[in-house]
Length: 151
Image (cartoon, rainbow, N blue to C red; front, side, top):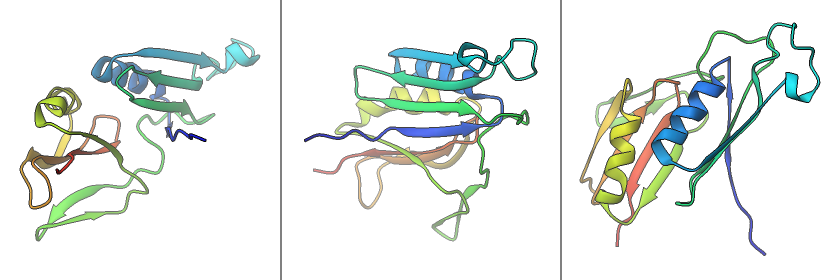
């Protein structure tokens, strides 16, 4: 038996923009359904928001997202922040999204694209445990942990 884990992110109105951004970074197919698509009258505020969103790429990347009904403040629900302090990662966020590859070259393009308008927590560089590790919080409030898998 095989199972698949897919991160599902909950947004406050930015799900469509976030999913389109992740599709542009990782490639693949984007599927978006709105509340109106599922029967909400189109004239009701929020009917155009995402009730189901998915990005699936051939490289194995998958992520889902939706807009919390009635929420319009943008960015990721749950908020929080992550920072480096005294050589330690300090966070009150519930989750990070982690991507990895066996080469730095395999990750560099994704890192560069995710870094647009992001807060860099730790630059992508060699670390004590990996030939490449970096962490950033993207423009939608999602923190990404990027790791070159050690041999």
